[in-house]
Length: 315
Image 1: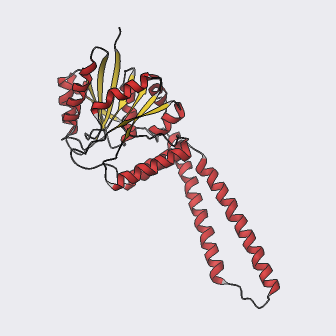
Image 2 (image 1 turned 180 degrees about the horizontal axis):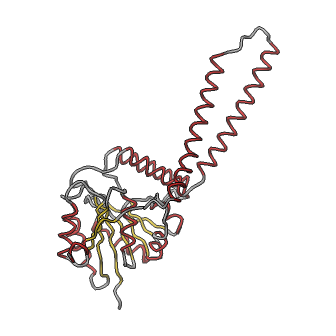
Image 3 (image 1 turned 180 degrees about the vertical axis):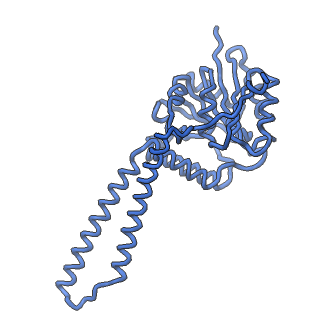
């Protein structure tokens, strides 16, 4: 029987102390079914401030199944995943983190679930072992995907997931400057499953996601894959216009019924500030869409590869 190939794509940032252990354990787990599956591991250095690229290079020198890619600057986790998918040659592609929190022992749980007929399978954590900031970010991200991208409410997405080859092929066709993997997955297929797994404690360091990066990720999600925010802007504009019209009628009626009533400057000012704030918010939202269209038209790259381990080893 011909072996299937599994490609593992791991974005790397600030993981100099953890990456080697993750890869060693991953290879040991893969060997449990070496008669059925062969593998490759693609490690993407997202311009990490530490010496993780040296770790990646050493791993690639020792194992021909390991490939390394290094970015010229920090492009973010989703761009790193896209770069890895572009190099992946496996029948199945599994994405996971570099910090040791992903349950490596559960990789074949994802694979077996795929074999049941699903196109994509996400690991669903029984309990998220992250700080409150990352948990909050994950909750917001889940709700955004449900409302804007049509993700089923009972489905839980994480950074530990497996995809079939055709899904990966469709994802890497995306050339927009603002990649968002969840949106690319959900627009490709709705045949998605979950497997319950246990998330581990972080081995070292802290999450690379800041509030700024989370906001950027959310904006990527709803501006690149949904027109619902613009539709909401239209509805909100109509509601405000209707409210202002009704308020004007009520004010006129009050004045007619009681000519002694003084016109209220404070109420007028509050209405002006409210309407003005809504207008500025909606203009900002439209500006985000237009700005991203402009940048995409100018062919801004999703990522720039500075070097690969193949280049370095051959040198």
